[in-house]
Image (cartoon, rainbow, N blue to C red; front, side, top):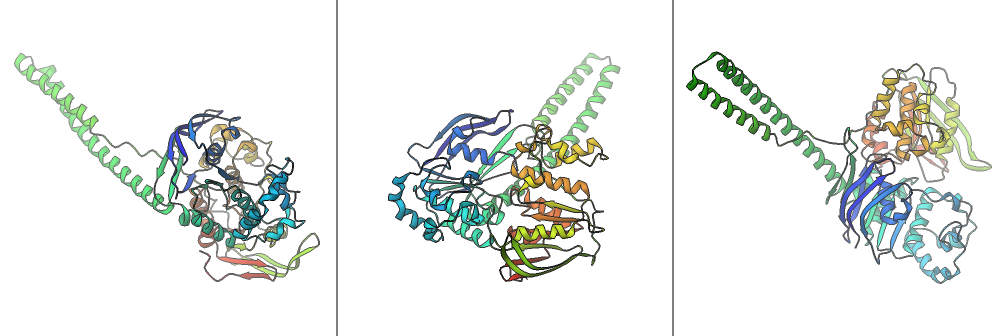
Length: 515
């Protein structure tokens, strides 16, 4: 089975993703890699799969022992070069620009079985359907089916929950739980982590340093988070208690030293001076022992992100935010659904759920257009595709500060630091940020602009499981209105006042639990 020995991964700018990582994968492991955005979770996963894929931007030391093992790797997103190719072709080619491997026709029955196993109609192989026309869930499923045809010994899954609706999320949870092969995966979805992970690898960069730290725990996600919080709290309490005792002892010894020094100056008697010198030596010994007693160091942890909307960004209670009537919701000439009626008043927070391809993003853009230039509302928008609002070739600092020239630069830097961007990342280009970092930059921009209505398309999809609780609290405490699309079950439960399901029959409020 996979064994990692003394693995160190260092980026070209000197940032260490892991240092001296040692890991042995067991046959029943469902190992979740967790950590803040930009900590290198995907890079570690990619390194395990193939060092060659990261050697252009990372230095790698140590061993990854996987000889004789077949590893299946699900990337964070399907290569866009597959978009205009047929589903059947996808199974017969290794890469988008490869030739069709006709020997794979011999495996057609195996491919059909794998498709059936994961809930896809095998007739899709003979259809004219293109990859680009598949839903997010269907794309994930065909990738997994293709991986399974190779009978992998280990599965690596990088953010497999992106673009999945709730039924497909539940399918994925069941898939991970029932697989007999070990799985290493990265996911921001806390519900999936809680239900499936039985081991945790936590990547951190310690507060105020470039030091990386990793923790391996042989427990589930929920237990790990709880145990970690308790351990950190206990360590902090011990540190504070020892500090109080230390300061008290130092104060006593300092007074005693002062008294003896005064006597040493004023007393001429040699025998008395010898006694005083001996007393001083004893005090110095006690001082040294007092220093040695301080065993518990201050808790060194990674800085959490901190974000908070301006309390003045408010939509008054009962103020009409949106009164929408759509006879037909269409993409091109294709009618997705009819007779949509939606009424939103301040400071309501609502979300849409629905199957992939049901038109949620299309509806959100209609709403965004309806809110445009509406008096008293200042609207911020986070699209699912961040490039709709971000310019990859722009400097991060320039993007955030654009049209915000009145803000103090030092204050701006403090805000940017609060979302865990380093100076190098802040002064670098948008294109060099991870998807999670881009999401935080968009949220920060909306926060600084003082928006009182947020239109959010899957706001938590690229956030880490550790950042998401902070993001949910920030949005829950927001005094304005939120209109969103999400399949994050914790977001729906903790942030949203109402949840609506969009289907071909219209828009209906969901009353049942989505947990």
